[in-house]
Image (cartoon, rainbow, N blue to C red):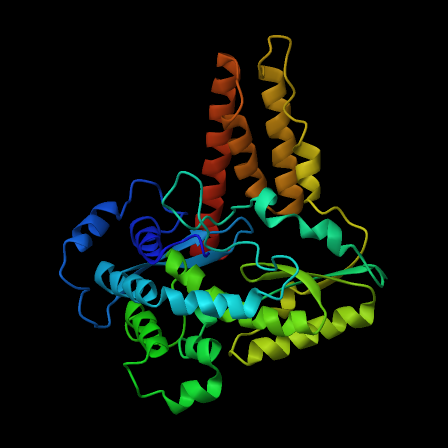
Length: 367
């Protein structure tokens, strides 16, 4: 994050981080950012409504997303820009002792782009690949993997907990009425984006991802000091331990630290898995060598058919329809014969239409 200047942060969050990545790419905030550059000052502070919409996730459960009023989001981005130096110091204080990067998905400088956040961005050259290192340690080998996450993370974040994370709960409560303090200004700007509400960050705008890191890096520091070896992808935790008892301790300690910030652990998705298991999802291994290249030097009709059949079978068996997204992206990056392209288009359009209709039935009738 040190590579990002305050002005680059402001432009990245406002011009390129206004709309959720799940929205069609027909929406842009670049012109609004250009307009804001000629304003003599930020828009005045005032609470504003926001647009709420739902996106169906790969597991078939909808996720509530949000589009803020442009003026309130500009104020939030400007506030984060103005106090970027303070925020950077906070991140240093929470993460400098880490021997590897616990947080795997966060804002960062990207090559040849002004966008500073991408949901699935991974740079193994810079960030390393600690999973393989966490399997073996000075006390032996990891025997269990704990998978846990925060229940409805962004909607559960209490805006007053931002100052708690930045300066401590006592100082924050002692100075709660002082709107001139920088950490209270960030709190206020977050509230205004959600019509004055103190509970919840909007899912979608990239500023929410930066703000969540302010809190979750504090949680990381407390868990790391207890000797836990884990990685975190936004609100998903993968912790490697050498005993079942240690796994239970991690779940208990994670829940306790999250409670300090009024964040709930998702017990339904908490799992303790005996190792070894594949680091990558098993379906990726099964699809990694598909589709094969035909004699023409391109992907041909039969190979496309087999690849889509295999992808659909895996998606149906696992209930994870991210597999279909993976299949589409993989085919889009390959050279296909004309008849193979037509087959892929027709089959994938058919599959996507069926999935959309099924999700509409679930939403309307609960089936």
